[in-house]
Amino acid sequence: QTVVTQEPSFSVSPGGTVTLTCGLSSGSVSTSYHPSWYQQTPGQAPRTLIYSTNTRSSGVPDRFSGSILGNKAALTITGAQADDESDYYCVLYMGSGIWVFGGGTKLTVL
Amino acid sequence: EVQLVESGGGLVQPGGSLRLSCAASGFIFNTYAMYWVRQAPGKGLEYVSGISTNGLNRYYVNSVKGRFTISRDNSKNTLYLQMGSLRAEDMAIYYCARASGKYVDGNYPIDYWGQGTPVTVSS
Image (cartoon, rainbow over all chains, first blue to last red; front, side):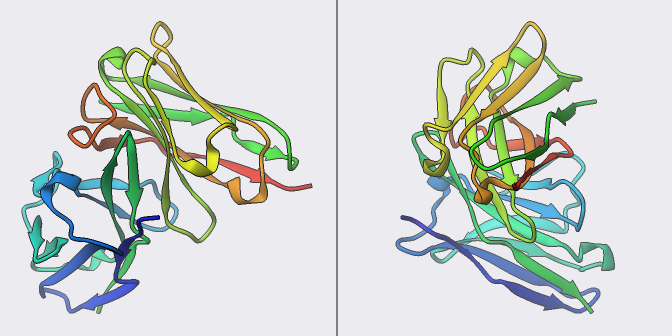
């Protein structure tokens, strides 16, 4: 069974840049997995940030960007702000109508 | 404005059944595939099921196959999830979500989410 991997936690200083990654337990992530990224604060529903590797969802500021870095999908936040402190989830399309989420990364801004 | 409002969650005994509903508004419902995603307490997101615009193509994560059924009523702009043989590990907040297009495939990921409805499985 394929596992989608994410860093459990990460921290960034206000104004800093952070890159979160999304990998596979076996193999490399490519655009054919159509990676998407979601942000979730405690008690709230997820919010779509990025889809199809690097397309920002409506209303998402351009300091959020998506890419493929090496063998992983990546979400980069530049100029981190206090309200970026959230859980971030990636999801990959595995084919046959099935998506698999990563375990999420808890981002701390301090 | 796209709105997805889930209902039907609640307390159910192990082995019991429950039907979740998701009322959609603010878009042409029958032109978008739809998804269910769940989140167990303190855990991450888990894809549960997806359905195409006409309801003919349905997909399930292995852990719910044979127990859950996704369906939709395009005349009522409503998505459903019929859940049966419920287990403790099914306890979660269940989110209704819209695909960005008409098919359940990689080109149409989730773009909008509902606020979720909680399901508690306990005796």
